[in-house]
Image (tube, rainbow, N blue to C red; front, side, top):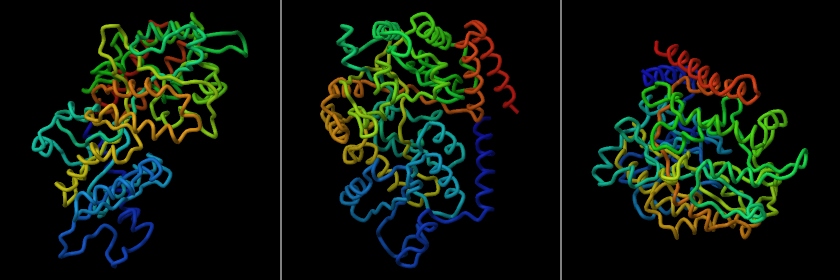
Length: 464
């Protein structure tokens, strides 16, 4: 049902794009005809060479494309990769809008990159990506074993994961030493709450909090309302894969209880009202030492050593995403990645797949800009990439590199849950109920009950 809705909704948008006269490749729009007089993306007849068009939101600065693509072309004579840059700023929303318009046009497409699970699932439902299961079977590997992100949608695979950005906890190491606390390597949410309480210091305007939660906010940053759900191998979302509500999961209630305990009882987390009313920023809270711990995504790797804009004046260490119970599997955490797919309309699917497989394995090492999702990357290779990333910061020597590398190596993603078309409505409803709770307008029982009822109404209204 959801796939049909996505297809209908997005197909309508694409048709509008066509009617508006948006056609041709991205390079055609920017540069006109190719040097040889061909339209952008066309191949010359009578040539043995294969030209593959790669559509991406990734910038040269963030993805090192020149070096990466040159390495592939040198290894595969006769194949050239044409980069179609969808956003000069690396803006994923702008890029996906352009990608959808390109897909609706006559532009030739071979390799596609999607920036998140929602975008991946939506465009698979639209028929933009080719199933890769046959190629994968021929190569003799399993996605769930070869990669740290399982990209199955249902029983099929339509993309392989590139970079690997797990969530983790960054900590002020100086504050840990001051409080006599060890750097955590395997801990629970109870441990996290205990650390936050012990790290909290002072009163009033000079108070230093143990931690800062940067969400939820207007239906965004909802990771902070799924803390005890996100470290589970399955059903880590508010909705299950079949579209039914997952708010009866005890871990949803347990997350609310944790947030209330830390803010109201322990007074160890920055108050929600301060975050909203003062429009607080997570970088400022951590780097200004207003909070000793910050739960955030590892896109922060490039900033851990401090930048010109946000300097670092203390030592930083890193810990894994906390578990619910001591005996739980270690390392499960929210993860963002690049979903690299073969375009369904490609005339060179085999060659496109070969690039996708190379890029998501060896190519990630060549690129050297991100931690790869490829599980066969060695610890030394991860350490080398981290060295490169940290060397771009102002004070890399202040970062506990071993803790960072160990955390990244141990991290892995839970199963992808394809998003519903009404996901944003669900997020907004849960966010609103949480605000009533944290502002003292209703208790946890009422919050869970109301959230369940509102989400069920949204689901029922979208069953048509």
